[in-house]
Length: 394
Ligand code: APR
Ligand code: PHB
Figure 1 (cartoon, rainbow, N blue to C red):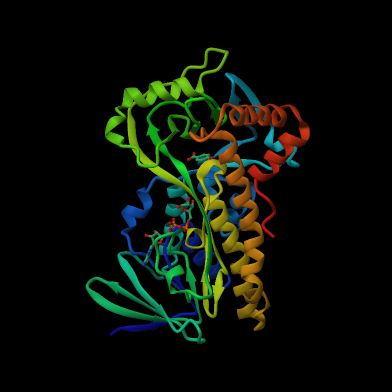
Figure 2 (figure 1 turned 180 degrees about the vertical axis):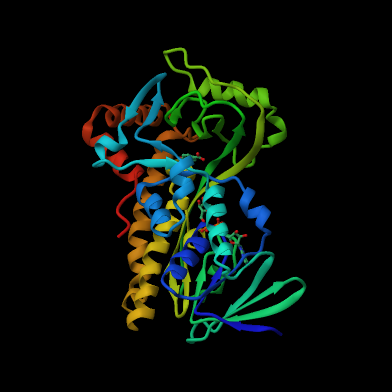
């Protein structure tokens, strides 16, 4: 069976695995990335697309920020809409000048893949990781299947960046791993449409029918979401019904109208909060969705994956430059502190903005009163702004 050796074996070529590979390469540390899916598949998978201030800087620092800076859309505020009225949260003004950027996750992935392949660094697509062994030793091994052949990759460190359904978290000993989870009684129906966004800024709307969100990918492409049942049947949602429902939920007292256009992609995402602890056992480290999931309301998924890379990247650079394991030893505790704060914000915003069938009229009034308070208090708006643009990476 073919066996290779590397310093850091990376399972998964999503944002976490690819950015980690790039950061390590820039520091002269070898890695091999294996990815179960094809390049075309990972480059076309439509996901969220809002990058925090520091996440944009991480792309630049890694040498892959040029297209993001050219094509990404800078945002300095968001709109909260409820009771038919709009309230702008001036993110940049309230966060000491920080901005966010709309840039699709698959664009981030494309840029990172292009950089890795241009540098001739190993990235194997359709290479399905089957097991991770020896994590209690300094020579863990990733077994994978590629082009009908079994391979072994021997590493110093395994970075588990293989998402929620990957093999890395499952490789942690069951008696070590604790999981914390909340499954919400709803999902999001998301669409991409060839239609100019009807607002320059994102609109988060709380309506008696349920939550909806107006976002975008470019000046000609809209990305919109509707709260729906977690097991909603997409076949019951012809395009006209989706547009009508979006228009109802996004309506305001100024005669807001959506720009309609051909829907090019539709999908349903269930909403979940999930954290696994710890993020490290022996020589195996978990990053990104492999370790934690947030509901998309706060747009934190990609940004959390990047923040994990920041912490582990520095720890690995330290280890290879100075021999010190201090950063590796504190990776889990350091990353988790920030993870839990982003989990809190995502859970809070989700709970504030969505319709819960279990809510009494009193609880609905509490949501509206809280929204009214938040959008009329500088302190309230500031707490939204500083979380939305992203808490400090460390
Ligand atoms: N072997 C190799 N690759 C695997 C395996 C396996 N056994 N299992 C999963 N993978 C791959 C998946 O195909 C996927 O491309 O790991 C990758 C994980 O990527 P993501 O799911 O994008 O996770 P991550 O890099 O942590 O990024 C988190 O993704 O889901 C969104 O909202 C989330 O924005 C967040 C981001
Ligand atoms: C998106 O554009 O996909 C998006 C933006 C903001 C969110 C969630 C998703 O909160």
